[in-house]
Length: 360
Image (cartoon, rainbow, N blue to C red; front, side, top):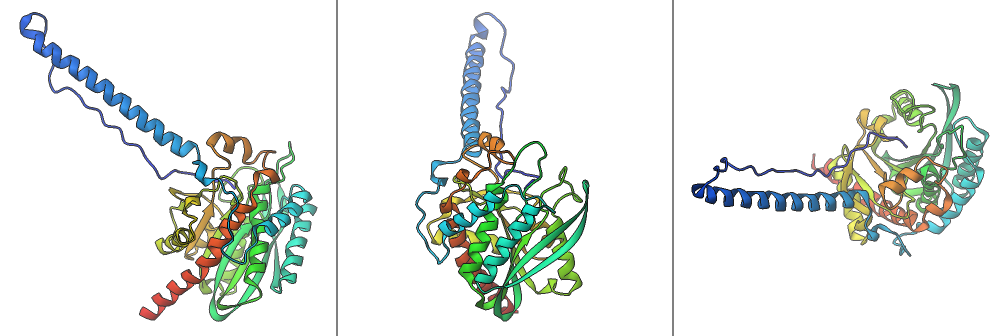
């Protein structure tokens, strides 16, 4: 997962300047000298206060609060974070899973088998992608929860790991966590539901094969949008939620700057109602991910991502896209939190759309 990443918080500095020059020497200049001294002291105190404010703001951004550490999460839904974690263990044991590899095929086999066990309809959509390292066969996997109403809700994630030729990258958080999370979400939702159908989509080729660009990234999600548009299914997609990097022990999911307000509010309000708002932050970010092709195609889309891996920016630098993205860095409790929130947010978001439709 790479991104044009931007924090939503900004610090503003103001400087206070003297309005007149201090007088020169002699008894008549003494009051001006005292005024200048006061101004110097005032400026010094102001600078100190601003420095403290800046330091406090920087620490808030650079270091996660201890409250974001997820411990012993209480279940609020049928979703089982521990079971998802066991699926993650199987996926990580496969090793690196870049597009076109045998390991990616083995990952798809696990996804396919577990979806069938859960009773979902399973579809695989292979496609050829031109990449900077040659033509690659990639495959998107879809599990369908059949609804009794017209329309589709799409939940997405990517199952590929970024390719690194110089070290072994197993991607427990990026993107093993969401690969396993979606398998458990499929079990939780089951084969049928009241309301719109839900498509659970595992995108291939989210990661760049060389350097992130419009052409070298998001292969699977771009292909899925093309497929749905060609088959005239895209207008049926009511909204799309993408999940990425949600297994971090320091769980802090950012607000998606480009998402519709009703989508953000639906998820964040649900988190607050469940007492989990400490993991759904007020900070915002603009991040390129698999939601983007859908948004550009006119589908309301929300990206849920914790783009600070670990308790600080330094932790993130030392863990994200490094050999340190390993199983012990992922928490089943974090998987539980996101599972609970999305499970309860889906019906409320759908109810909102129904109310909007009826009022027209």
